Image (tube, rainbow, N blue to C red; front, side, top):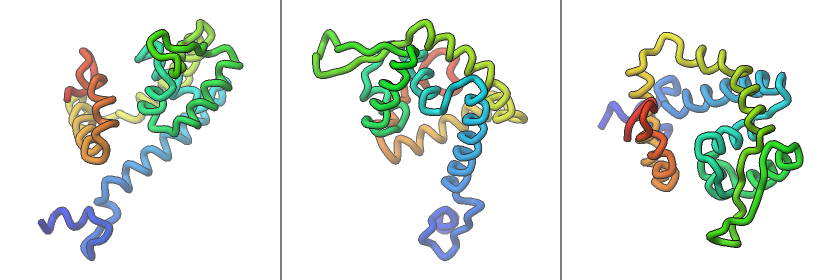
Length: 172
């Protein structure tokens, strides 16, 4: 299929500006830089923010579930969780169903940190989707979900629940 070859870096027809992963990497990079600046102003960082937001949405979660949703190595998540536990933002305990599993939950201080972070970063979210309709955001989410499913069904299944929740931007 000739039209797809422009998206394949191995093709002589490849065009960087038409390569979706070029744009994904740029968007992620700029988003991360902007989030780092905004979160630093309220004494947070991106790894902490990511974990706090996962816990806000998911509730008490295992370390491995957090790692799955954060798309991070378990060892990295574990180090971050214990650092923010020392800061009083989360609590850890042993799962009542499986003593090998450590579960993490928000503390009141963690909830307050989320509120500070939301205020500090809301301008980034609003600016990110400026000029887009809700339908465009929904289609973007659907396309990204499809790419994630193509790359890793395990990660896609983890995010499918978010796409099916009432009020979410897209449905699976």
